[in-house]
Amino acid sequence: MLVTPKNNIVIGIIIGLVVIASYNVDANPIDFVKGVPNLAIVVEEMLLVEPKYVPTAIWAMFETIQMAFIGTIIGFAIALPLSMLAARNLNSKFVYAPIRALLAAIRTFPSILWAILFVIMVGLGPFAGVLAIIMYTIGFVAKLQYEAIETIDSDPMDAVESIGVSKSQLIRYVVIPESSSHLLSQLLYMFDYNIRQTSILGLVGAGGIGFYIINYIKFFEYGKAAVFMLVVLVTVLIIDWVSVKIRDKYIIKSQHGMEVTTK
Amino acid sequence: MTQIQMIQNPSFSLISTKKIIQMNDVWTSYDSKNFALKGINISIDRGTNYAIIGQSGSGKSTLLKLMNGMMNPSKGTIKIDYVSPNMNNKKFKNMMHTIGYIPQSLGLVKNISVLENTLLGALPRLSKMQSLFKKFPEHEIKEAKRILNLVGLSGKEDRKAYMLSGGEKRRVAIARALMQKPTILLADEIVSELDHVTAHEIMDLVADAQKRMNLTAIMVHHDMQLALEYANRVAVIKEGQKILEIGVEGDTIVDFQTGDMTSDDIMEMYAGDTKK
Image (tube, rainbow over all chains, first blue to last red; front, side):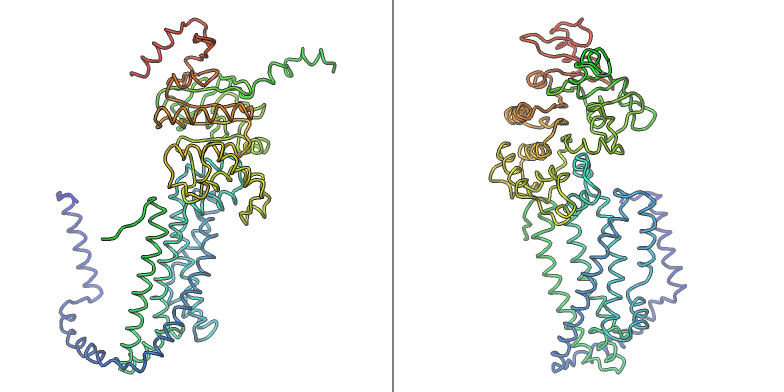
């Protein structure tokens, strides 16, 4: 970015707004510095890891992964047709506008609020968490999908449309293959994201590993909580590594027509 | 109505059945201010190879889009086999199944195979269930493989479109159009970026398919020599107007529009135009 008087004014305004907002929400750096010793106590206690809880943590993580998996797949399957209806290059305003409004409404609530709602509806446990993940995935992925669909090359669409095919054929044979690399990328991203999300849904009693973490923290048993947090960390790292491999093999290659080489 | 009366009736003359495309005083614009085409009159005989040449932005591609119903004229009439090309016209929508269109960018679906791209031409012949489950009948797959063999892509059926060279991509686009069993082929500068040898190979392919299937080919070109080599007639478009319509008869270039120009005049005029 060029350093011009206009840019300096913009940067000055942004800094000013950050300072005002920090004052309004009592974000005081001095309090942060004063609180560092408290963090040191927590970390010290966390280092007293209790390995006997590893099997329980792994089992809870397995439940979390299953919840995220079900939620991602079902949410994605529902989001796909909705995104086709929400894409401006495939539909008239009368179709895409209400669908976009519906998706925006779904997206308004974070997954934790959906989880509270479903806990009230179906009771405590993983099922409420799965429903929350489905809803969050629909709102979030459908937006990513219709934005990806709107950016696909219009030439293949024009060429196939000129054959006189139906709208469903156009979607099935051009739109989905043309956006497939984006869709796969979004599916992987969402699964990765949902595992982290599902890990905290236990806070409101919607199952998963978060249920254990929040309860051990409530009772100041940081050593036990650390075991569960470490399992989450290792799982996220493994999933991240698998995602990178899938992306390299199927996504980047198809987008650029080449193999990916790493240094 | 007796046979003599039918011939005397101008709305059903033997001469008119020869014409497959007729454009009368066609005007069109993209922004409702500047006209991309101004008063175009074109009449194309069934089974011929008709070339349209002109500089970039002269309105050549717009002409093709009007012929396949992707655009509508602001003024004037267009008839494709006596039907107005409009995507909302059900009769024309059915006709579109047999109008092969190859855009300048070729319009291949890059993430699917050569065979799948070719089979797109057979989509209108599939039932709803076949279409939904991507179940192409065996005879269609066999036909697609036969066409791919014809265009020199045998053995590359499973290759993804993004892996192909420029010449191969053009062959796939031609195969997709031929898979439609077309009566009309509209091709927009499909050889413009190719070397001389490959360009002639592609043009030979189209000429061969045209003879075999008796299809009418309307091809947009940049190169006058190439157009005269393959086409029965060549229309020269400049700034949205047809300034010339010529053809080759024996060793001479004939001016079909005014009849006033000699071969030297025409070549000199076109050379002057392209230099600009």
